[in-house]
Length: 353
Figure 1 (tube, rainbow, N blue to C red):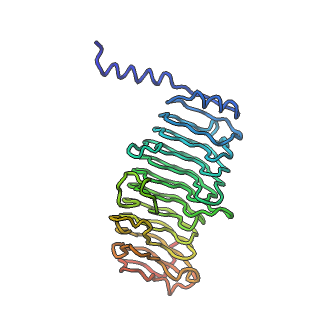
Figure 2: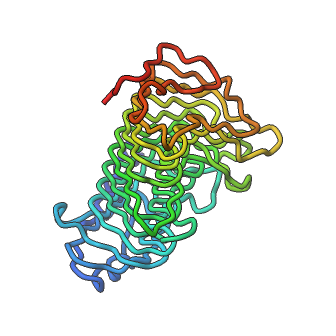
Figure 3: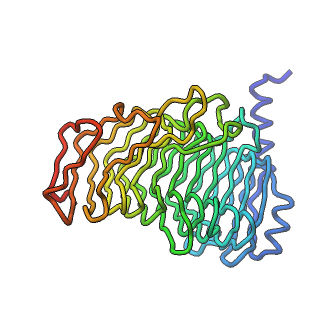
């Protein structure tokens, strides 16, 4: 009898021997390739225009990428450009998606709330013109763990640029969010529904909705992952981002533990931060335990009279402000904010740029 380890190796090699690389060059060959796609395959798509509206379910370790990274294929229209349900190990690279009426990309766990999908990577995806009105996201992610979204660009959307519902241990890095006139963006990034252990870093937000960074949110109880979570989000880090415009730079909404550090904030139009509680179910933690540290904050007193908007049912006293540099460009002598707590080692009235 062969050792179990040898049988395992043979099965592994055999399964990967069946995986193949497929090149498609037009819409018809794409449709044909999708019908025969198997786990482990790599689909390379030549430059050109292709229809959206594709759905893939229960394939693992699948890669879909541009044949020519300098000239990505363009998937136009459809409700969702692409929807992937229960596709662990998925990699999408150098693709362009636009003009969808629901979401640009939809990535989910197929409604199996207790079994997250793991190991998805999105790299250099360009999503634009989604919606334009209503809750329509550039990239919608539900029930995903160990997700990486890297160097993507979202331009013009109707809901959130990137929306996480119950996602964990994930990274969003080096992405750009550019609001567009005629699209009613509510947030650039939203992290809610039991989301935890997510880092947002080195991203650039330009007029990216009412809340460019919505750390937390409002979620119906049946959609939380994990079920029974008593917070919209926890253990979030937003660091080294640039946030230009928006009604505020960041909203902390039902979050229980976050760090906002090293960011540059430029000219929000009403508030700098918001502290809110939108989920008020029994046992839910109030918005609390946030550290705001080492940020550069440039604003105009003609626009911002209240630096921090605090809503009912929150715990602003649990927030810590440290070493932030505040500068009211049009009235430097009025740069010091009126906070709900004392700030440690803040700097006021000197341009930090």
